[in-house]
Amino acid sequence: MPLARQPPMIVGNWKMHGVTADLAEMGVIARELLERPTSTEVVICPPATLLATASRCLDGTGIATGGQDCDAKDQGAHTGGVSAAMLVDAGARYVLLGHSERRRLDRETNVDVAAKAAAAFRAKLRPILCVGESAAQRQAGRTLAVLRRQVLRSCPPEAGAGRLTVAYEPVWAIGAGATPAPADIEAAHATIREALSRRYGDASASIRVLYGGSVDGANAPQLLQIAGVDGLLVGRASRRAVQFLPVVRAGETAPPPLDYLPTD
Ligand code: 13P
Image (cartoon, rainbow, N blue to C red; front, side, top):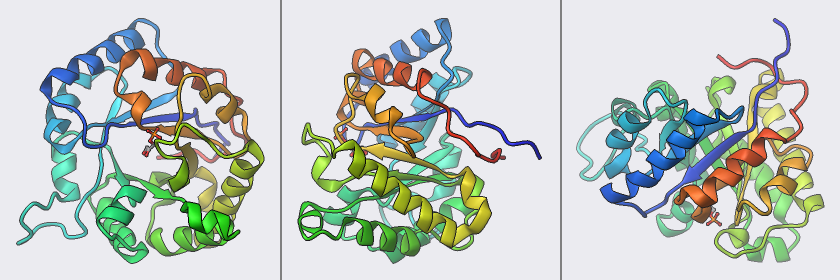
């Protein structure tokens, strides 16, 4: 099969923000991208309560939606649980998994994340699996070892590699208004790619590795120039069209990654 180049992926994570009225912002983003289509792949992950409505609003616009978490079980007696199949039923194509806020606040382990990713694959959802070191781990010089371990332990062996995306989000950079030095991001992404290659062999070539943590319209162009950065995961700057659209547009001028295999 000929090699194809994947466009950068720009993912908005609304976290626990947004009610029905905020879907108007999504409408603005969709209208703008319909008027001037983008070559980037755009995904918006609203809170679960808005997912079905958001998916309907964005249907036919080229913007995909994603959940922010899913259960490891397919169904059952787990009050409050949301299964991967339920996210698909609500129109989602993607699901964020292992976000550091869930790892930290909900005590999710690598094993938990791997089980959720396996559930996502069973439901034909595409996981965007987050990894990243804490400030203490960084200060102790353990960043690359932590990333290697998180990738090897939280990516399930049965991954259809073409359906997996990994996001590098240094915990200390989230919401901080600071990003790592470009050389550090490059080293982190190289380490993640190495671990993915150990995990999945040649099939790992089609996995995109995104950067996340204090991304905005001003720093997106530089971040997307860093070797190994295949897209961006955006928090605060994803909830308003005026902030999110410049990040999406930055993806259009990013150098295309080489040697990618086509995804399904
Ligand atoms: P901020 O862009 O607000 O730093 O959040 C990043 C993030 O956690 C996205 O998942």
